[in-house]
Image (cartoon, rainbow, N blue to C red; front, side, top):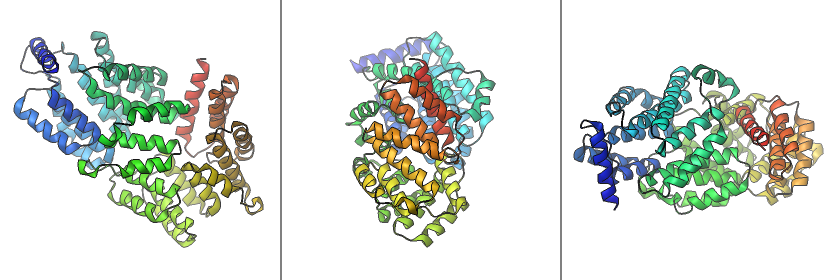
Length: 496
């Protein structure tokens, strides 16, 4: 049945193309696509070469090649590799443009290719080029959706575009003004969800379902405060994560966000190294985080150093050095802490929240309170009882005013995670009252978390109040991330 259906699709596209240029999404190509998404890049490239030998006119080939290179650049943040691909990107787009306008794949492929390289250009600071490509992707997919409204894959890319539009930080609002694009996170999430429901049950498009699951998962863990959502994602990932490094990465992210550090370490331990995965050094950084959260600096430091020395990009480098410094501090080695913090000043960039925060700590030159740091790390790992027990042994008279703010914040976060909401509300409120004058994120994130609590408990008025308060506070650390979440929360409350 499946072979007959593929033959029908192939002959239909051949008849409408009016030339030898066709799209054949056969079993080999579907397997290549799944390999790309799983980061089995060598396997994918071998399948693509086989397809070239058997079906050299298949326009799915340049699309797969483009996707392969995009994944390499996206996971490695290798700007030199990206620069070397410029000619090939152009040639592949030319190949896809040979498809007839009557093919539903023409604008879909072109839209996806433009979106992929737009995200890379924006990541590397090529804002004008990225904005133009984003606009081109948006126009192509909108038109394709109008011409082929029953073509479900349209909704995947449109969903991503609408979410991206809804998440544009204030400082990049000029991009939307320039390219006249509209969309929202809610709209995009609905499109992704409907696409997943359809594709996961369709023989034709099932090969796209893991990709949609990855997009949906990464967005949900960063935007949705409802723990039931992540439980559903983990359920969907249960049988998939050991077959795909990208889905293992998603599962690790979800588990770390939920404070399930031991379970995240289990996923790391079950990654099959025999699959010859493409190097994904950010996983070393996350592995270091997992070890640090269980206060195991001996295992954390090698993971951070492998990330620092092998990763070609600049993001998280400062934070990795800071965490190596924390490893020294946990061992009560303040000299080692200061040595590592000097590297924070020297290496990496200040583009993302974690690196900005690391730089802020390095420039402050104040050694953190060791016991408070341990409490914070234990909390991050989901060891809430141990974190609360340790924090209650700290003598408040030994703390500065700012450290006292941090202590109350950590207590509030622990109570929040064990669903003792009255205590969480109490300590978040104290953090806001005593910490709003500082430029760090503690007061703002406390307001955000209060908005989350009241949203989950159904008090939309109080929830909206705290989301607004979060947006009104002046702070530097993790600004874009926290404000983006507050804006989305406020939108959800406005819709109720």
